[in-house]
Length: 214
Image (cartoon, rainbow, N blue to C red; front, side, top):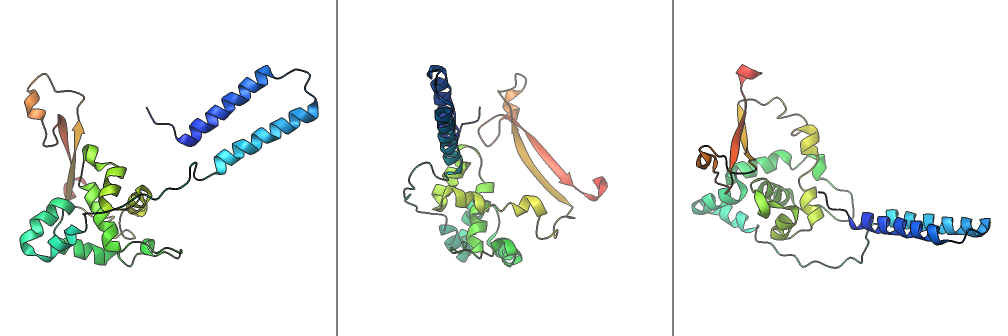
């Protein structure tokens, strides 16, 4: 069940209060008073909808340990640790940064500049390479030392919209990828065969894109 936002809860509470007030309001209320009360209610509802932050913004202490990945990249003996964190070799990571760093999505004309491209890519790959309770937006943001909004922003909606750099990888093939479809419970027949490295029971779905199925 989706969690209601604080804004929606406040709006529902006020609408409920309006309904209760309407029930117990004297019938002989004059038209002008009713109009003023309705106008006041509409102004309050509009204020609730247009107020961006429902509470004062409080500074959240931030720290990160993800930048240790750059230290791992400098020493070949530590490359396996880099791969464990980011799921790709340092050389491939550096090449990917070069491919995307000049894209307009990483250019900002606002007062506050964007984070370096390599840092945005690092956070994105770190999140994509993790699964389960430790891969929530809040958890990744805390480990990356950034806000939850920043952690979401660095995923870049353009990846979904453009499937790569202006279609550069749109026609790619000879690719395989997979994911685990988690089962509700352990199957009754040969259940142990469905146990995954993620600590649950699931089916391994593999998707391939090869010339034979184009």
